[in-house]
Length: 371
Ligand code: SAH
Ligand code: SF4
Image (cartoon, rainbow, N blue to C red):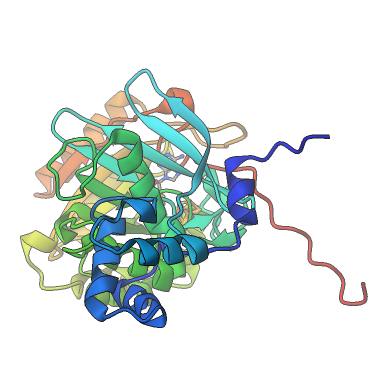
């Protein structure tokens, strides 16, 4: 009988060490272990992250013996594409498979003048925000640094965007807004984003990278100190009682603490303006009084408000606010002097819009100790 292997299964069966996810120091160490000087390690690093090579044989400035040795012991991997969907509005969604058969989703949102890639940080999510489809899936595991940076590299493969320094409009921005809470997987996400922002790596400006958090307060300071990327906060409610229900992490880090952390985020300059995401839920958080309270709460923070029409999913108790309610809310936000935009839903037909991502990966039951 012939065994049909999926690409993800083939990867799992590959015993070679994957170099994707290693930073420069680690690749220099790999080169050293093969008796090579540091500059060789840097060349390999640049071939991988700047040029997107997946085959050591193409690394023309390395001698053939070294290329062969690298091929025997190492690989340059990518997440496998298990499903690819294209929306009528041009949004693409990929269901990605990782070596252990877990899956996560990645979305690309092309616009006229820019292209945004929405990257996942975890398979599932530990948090259970009431309006989020991902939140109905338990956390299966954190993604590794290689699996996070590998998503960006795979998107470049798909669009043919190598070398990374080449100008393009298909992939100008990265948002850590896919599945999972990135600040609960900080080390791996930070390592991946350092490679994304490294001039010898994927060479993206930190101003083009946004990390979205539901409000993990201790992680916000680390994000500022260690990454300096743009920050987005999933606010969604302006009163603790409601936010406790909608974004349960609020019970641990209530609004006052969250907004204090935002005030301290980097220098309070417009360059570091924080985006506050606010999902519009009919008759739940969409009154003009809520908008005025938002203006009061955000006073003194360089803020930009992003109103997100709720994207429904099967089984949800919520409905999206009416167009009128969203317009009234946006007007009140503007009258209060805040910059605000309404996010147009993208990719709803392929279930790729904010909060609609979910994979079928489940956490295996823990095997009883006696077994
Ligand atoms: N876990 C992180 C990042 C992923 S979610 C976070 O919560 O910030 C990306 C954004 O989509 C968040 O603001 C999230 O609250 C929002 N979102 C979740 N479910 C949604 C839905 N059904 N409709 C619209 N936006 C949603
Ligand atoms: Fe997790 Fe973010 Fe969804 Fe909340 S909104 S459940 S933090 S992915």
